[in-house]
Length: 501
Image 1: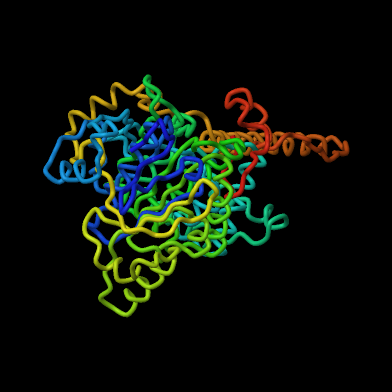
Image 2: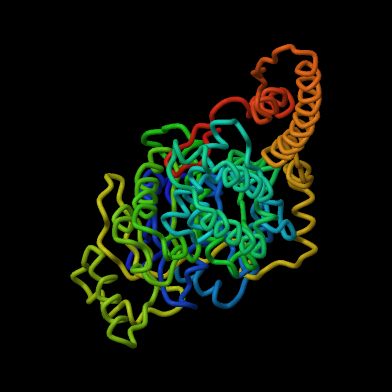
């Protein structure tokens, strides 16, 4: 609960209230605990508090239970008990609906969320396709060729066409980039078919998501709540994890340096965060660590939600300053090891044994440690999390659809675009090649007849040369004005190989 008079977030209450300093929120946070221990309640309380202080929020909704944030909560005996025991009536606690905007990769329960192949770049796309090192290298070559020729890769048919083009011209590119085998090209094409079956043909396209639209506010000054419907997306964990990584890197490239702020510019909550790192190569994890470390200087607060802190790589976990640890269960030796590691990650409280308390926490209770105003981790405390102000229940589809239609971005993201890109250009290239081949055959036939005639009357013949543009050069040159400024200049890529706008 945000307390504007103190400019603090009241998160929980133990022996005393526990406050999160907004200026320390961009040191990131972790919400961990076993299933059913109260992680979602903690997430809601924090997200509502950020919104109340004017900070836009992003939430990944895995279970569908965050949709109720657009409706004011109602009193239950459990909430009333928390209100009374924590003295919330004295600070004006009341129920409230929040300015929610729903988003959905599949476009059914929210505005369509799309990106282009060019935007995602070869590194993240290789991970999404499950390519090996050789195949990833060839995909990077395909992107390099497309970038240098200024060809936009918007959707899957663009990438397929570009793969075919590079494969057909492998001998030419081999001298520049190395061997390009037809087997690897075929393997990438088959991987694209699998991606299409998972919904990639819906996810890749235009209009592509402009993340600056998430940095928005309601008329009353509260930060917009951007909720991504993930119940279906989560059934394809690799697509889900890669999508979240793409968003993180896009934000990193989009936002300017902000320095020390009194509150974040944007707060991100990544549920099931272990999927960001599952099966990821070391090089990719190192890049994630770099982004997490640097994005705080852009004013972004990132919160990872997962069952166990060990789900997060140590290199990333070391960047997290604020921790809310709900109960953990230790039934196996590995569970006991993880429990011990979680307990040791806190600054010890001499009043209790952290490891023992961690196993005995009830639903809605947690071990909490946040940074103070100087950035020093606080001594861990056992506390009860405050109740959220919005509804604890999922809302109905009618309310969701009404909220979608009332959004200021309804028109922008409803229509599907398919402008001229690599597929169309390469189709024209192939048509031009066929036309030129036919003209060359006809010209050769005429020249042969002329040569025979000249020889028949005793005259000599000479060779002829041509300085015609290749079909690719001709098509790229003639379509610059059609495609616009995106074509005809080399595309610049950032840290993850994502395209810089």
